[in-house]
Length: 254
Image (tube, rainbow, N blue to C red):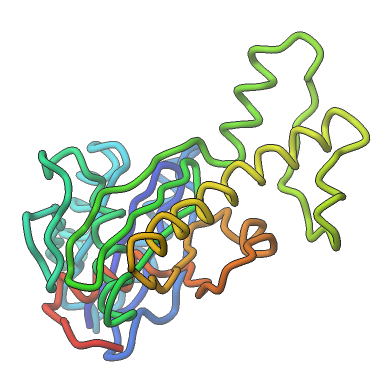
């Protein structure tokens, strides 16, 4: 059995690889206690685990520590990297090393699942949007702060905005985005900034003759999912699926 690992900026997700996707998905926040987080992954490894395949945009020392821990359990770990071409997609970055591997594998999974043009939005600590055309050309993408980072920036740089904010929960009317207090106005503004960026990216592709299938992923994607006015697939485990497809050479459309 192959263990799939996704080390993000704040959380580590892992799952078991199956023919039709990742299964038994788990996640842990590692920012406050790296050792405890890694131990929880190690404890989930059993005798059926033969290898691990991962993608990491987190600290190198966290990745290396996890590699060592799994090695002690008899599991060799292979970490994926961005390449010029993979699974029918040509990378749009001039310097492939500057593209986050999580964005790359999610884009590959989106393209394979769409069987054509895809728009992949991941909303976590940061929000990223990547586009790939129907012929497999990755166009590059956008990066903006995630919901929490946007709010934190306002709290840190303004004198009269102090309280924390969670993402807005399901307004029934877009007029409700006009908050009647400062905290709500911050929440709504942050959420709409990410939502509008995704919809603008979709419109840009559509205006150039592409009809992309939209995939929404990431730990903070649920709030954005409630607000999008375009059709989309909510796939929180898209990065893990991309790791499976690239790491195991599974280029079949699904």
